[in-house]
Length: 134
Image 1: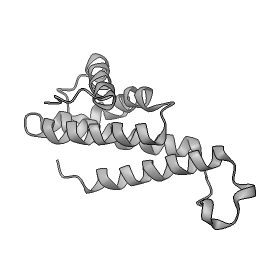
Image 2: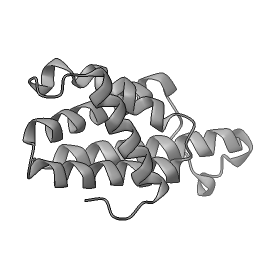
Image 3: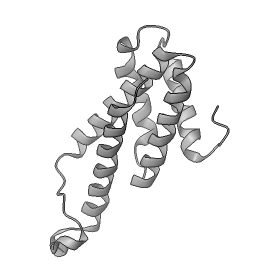
């Protein structure tokens, strides 16, 4: 499992170690997934949109592989990632959906473009997680 030791996979494994250190993952996942969300968030903060996308992809890979052996852990990580992404989106708040082709470039700073792209990535990831069967 996780033979590819990319930065994204490394972040996932570190987050999983952190989750296992602070949560009793043998308990029903609904009892610990909210705490695990904080562990995941620590590894997603301050990443670029591309890094978030890669890391969430690595989390999905981990969830799929783990579900074969430990469905409770896989569901807990999936739930925690979902909670984490929703909380991060709530923190960011409303971001215009504009893009560079909208004609509003003078009102759309580089920060807004980066943030809008990050929001788009996180929303797409939430959709992928919703569609996952564990």
